[in-house]
Length: 193
Ligand code: SF4
Image 1: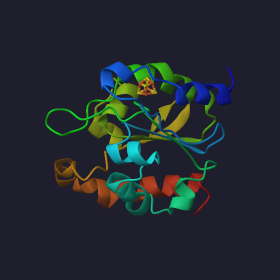
Image 2: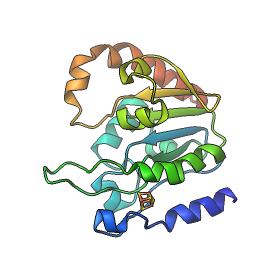
Image 3: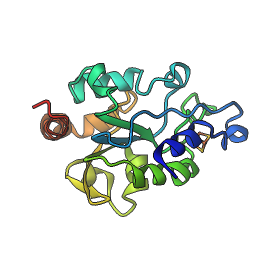
């Protein structure tokens, strides 16, 4: 299978339609030679509606504050391959939060993307994505060190969601010390530094 064929298959996927109760909208972005392979949890409802990844409050914090880059840089396919455990918004639960991402999607599509994208760096966002990719490691340990995935450097970020307040309160050293190191790695790969 070529990479273009893989993308066509993901775009056409409706495997979770019955479980979600609506027609799924797979959202991912990038190309086989993107420099950074970014893996998060699942698209938000706003991303589902606009079909643009990280086009929400979480994305604003990630792009403008943490990475300190513009949309032109973030959405340049040479720079980022943007995907997630669940390629589709998984719907809302009874408490108003988002449903957990179906890991069946990661097993079906993410593993194939991992085999085919020729990236230089992985950025993994949130505890669920980290647990899927590094099942033996503690999330806190992963955030504060450089890791390796598929023989390439990998960094793990906490989820930048505005709802993730407690984690940031409990770990002030992330934004003070770790984030500048991570930003430097990202800028270096993007050749911005
Ligand atoms: S979440 Fe993944 S497996 Fe489910 S419909 Fe979307 S692309 Fe298909």
